[in-house]
Image 1: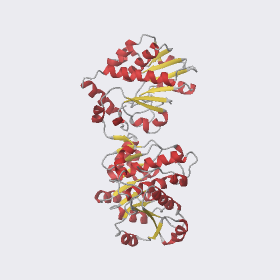
Image 2: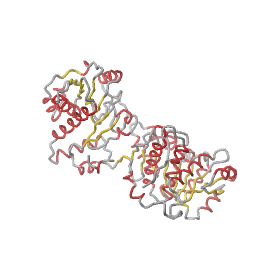
Image 3: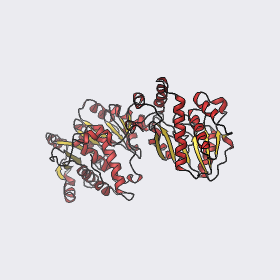
Image 4: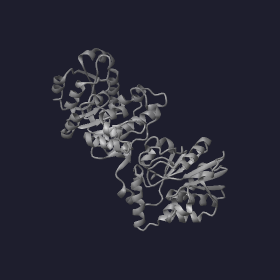
Amino acid sequence: MHSSLHDVLITPAEMAAIDLAAAQSGIDSFLLMRSAGLAVAAAVLRLFPQAQRYVVLCGPGNNGGDGYVAASALAECGANVAVFAFGDPAAALSGDADRARQLWDGAIDPLASLVPHLGDVVVDALFGAGLSRDLPEQVVQVIERINAKGVPVIAVDLPSGVDGRTGQIRGAAFAASHTITFMARKPGHLLLPGRSLSGALDVVDIGIPARIVQAQGGGWRLNTPALWSDQASRFDASTHKFRRGHLVVFSGGAQATGAARLSAAAGLAAGAGLVTVASPKSALDINAAQLTAVMLREIDDRQDLEHWLRDTRLGGFVLGPGFGVGDRACDFALQLCDRALVLDADGITSFQERRSELFERLAVAAGRVVMTPHEGEFARLFPEIARDEKLSKIEKAQAAARISHATIVYKGADTVIAGADGKVAVNANAPPSLATAGSGDVLAGIVGAHLAQGMPAFEAAAAGVWRHGAAGARAGPGLTAETLVTSIPPLG
């Protein structure tokens, strides 16, 4: 596979344009289909060499064509192959897919007649990533029959029933153990629930030049260190502590100081040179008793903050974890829009009724602002976008970044990072165990450390989400927020 395509994400519409551009450049489109089908057959034989029968399900489009090629290749290897087609293949297929069907010299049975047996391995070539409407009832019934039997399914391109643009289920979907896709990942492979239905993903290079793929792609990426490694190389642990940035985390009142201390500890572990917890007077004593490597500063009101902000060495701020919801949070945040700020948790919720004020301030502010909403907080800050069912999670994050003029980290098991300039990365390295109390406070601290070090907002956020996921994997299944902090990997 082209290394330059390793982290590229291609929408189904872009993939259709890529196929067209490849054909127009003189590449034989049937040879591409043949490469795809042969890659599927090879994967099937490698993964399930002991199958008693390979059941190939062929749909009415090019995905079905890949299936016929795979069926022919499996049969040539001496395997027991049965082909079932949806609809009337002779009438439905044209072009390359019809040619592939004609080269298959076995029987083609109607899909509805399929009775799955234990010992079967199903090759799902019904509908690819381009599916954008609900599946026909007959297909839904077959999917339910196969899922109920529990036989392995290998999906061609994407499990049938998963919308390749949004990852949503269109009526029903196969739960595949493996998926073979071509040239680049699609959003539906990474966005839930599509991600949990795709199983192990193989991305196969079928011979379309990388330049054609990149020319048609819209710039969406899988979140990997390649996105920020040139930023990370500027920071190393031997740099003077002020050069590595001074991070400030705001504490709530005496009843709610733990979240801020967790954020501060994460910021220190993630590489900030200095970390200060800014605490109201009421919580000074309890914070002082708990903090060792982290400094403490009394900041009670706007005047205190305004006075302190004259210190230009304060590199980044985290406002929200355990802070409390209300006007004080809004006042502080609005004062910090010209600086590098992570607005999280209570900081986001505080702006539910003052959204436009925040967005207007961010539109003219010169700061680097990252907001890290989970689904509930996202709906509070961006209710119209959250309600729009036509949009994928990626498109929702993009729209939110555009109207807020901030970098948005739309959290979840499939976190999306979207920059105000349209940049997008989808994260895929987070283990399920990350959904633990305090996990979001840790993330806010890591992103804050990156901002304090001078990283641009999008890269700071993307690197933070990735390191947070990697820390979760290192901490293991029984992780707590505290073990997460000690498991943060190096940035470089």
